[in-house]
Length: 357
Image 1 (cartoon, rainbow, N blue to C red):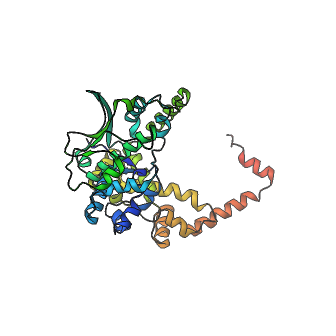
Image 2: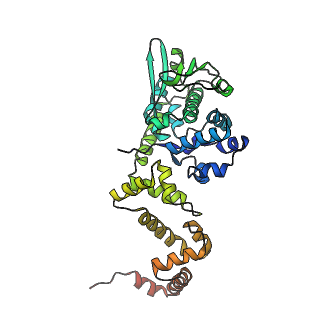
Image 3: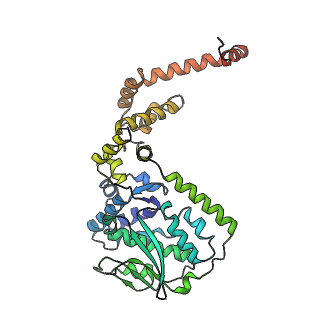
């Protein structure tokens, strides 16, 4: 059965300046995988892991830059791990923090797992990808591995170095940025992807550890994980809401955000008793009620918020949906509100009393 794999949008912070630096048209690059720039502006947005993988591989191929993913990490500067960082800093030592990372990683991504393996005097933080197509995306694999190294540095020290960084894919031309980022030997063609630490590294105590703060942080992360377990229809609704303003919502774009085809999108929505058009209509109807009653908002702005490319298209939809033009509906609503406001206090109170048989 299909399973959605997503990545927190913060992972791609820095992609735009890197793309421009290597001569790529950022807008065209994002459009090629149906990504809207507004998703990159919201670090908490969830992006299709397959589409992120495709985006990075396409950028690398078009630019001829083999270390495109690593350049994004270098461009990002201070890492953004979101709410996950709250818990990791409150663990008693690095070992406990890395185990918590594996437990709660889904807050940031469910595209891969991380496992702390201790054997033969070594400690390995290994990445296990859940889909071969994602694991084959060299740029995404290297980017996420570099982020794991940043997490460990956040815990131990900004100057910390791994013993070794291993990748399952082949080396090709070894990029200099790999050494710049990891500050240790980097080997390719291994039977795993991950970071090799010294045994003493994971014993490092975390000075900020606080048992009460840890309990609160863990409870908060659990509530976030519950909040991300939406059914398929709810996931589609959240994507439509994000794409809607400015006319970016479409079945093709929504399917791309989920990493599936439009045909699969339609089939899965039908299984939930929905269709793409019915969800879009429901969302637009709900939003328009809250906007059109506010006289200060121009109709053209409402049209844009609802995803219509012109005021005339919005007016036609509104008339078909509500049987009146938006301007006449607004005038009628204003007249009703004015009449209510002109009522005497006793008349107003009588309107509030329930009618008795």
